[in-house]
Image 1 (cartoon, helix red, strand yellow):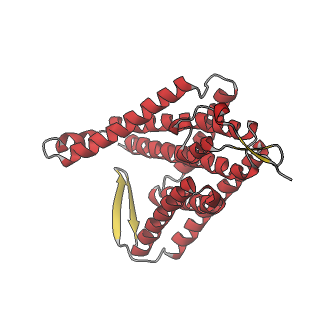
Image 2 (cartoon, one colour):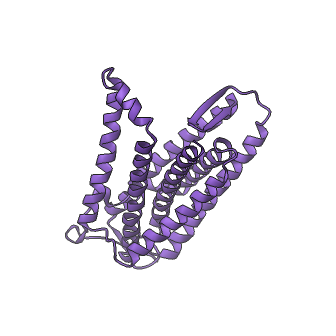
Image 3 (tube, rainbow, N blue to C red):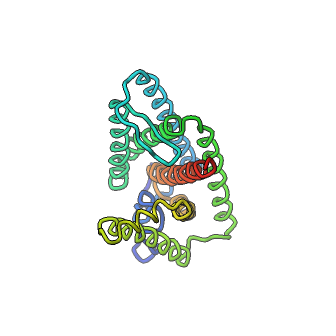
Length: 283
């Protein structure tokens, strides 16, 4: 029989919104402990693998849908980047739009309703797989190899950050969280200022010129990738806490979902960078 206890308030670790990504940050508020049937690294790894497998299934589903809609008339051609355009039928556009909405909704539900994660996390992972496949095999037609390059680089980033964390070179302490907070707020602040600047007639030309500058946009993407990679450190720290403090086994789902969320985020940032570099190289 599993015995649950409550952690005394006086012994709880200092908690912060940026202890990890939005999904894993909810784990920092858990005060349940158990000596039996507790969360384990093996259990978290198994559930992480499950979500990644579902992501792969989502990619296969997109390829099937793309094949079924191959004969549909073109509804609209969209320029994604300078060298990448995608022609969509109305059904394809509706399918992609629906998948994006489903992914966002299930992510939010998973953040605020932890017990739904086995279901919402599965749907979210499948939706992200669909989006990744759409980008690689539809948008990047002729450049599909960039998807594989992004995958290999993502594995390298995750391995490198795992080593930096396990070796103690980077620690998820107060100084680390301060740096992460500064980078994140700076990135968000720049995005807000750019948006407001685009609404003001006097500053709109300057903002548009800045956003069309490849060096500037690549720099922003690199900063975004650094932020995503640093979130891995806080994710690893939260997973350690989950296991070492004896969280109930059900929290393995939250830990796995949070880790997959960050890994997919990193993959998409790397893929975005590779798309920009490929376009610049062709110039």
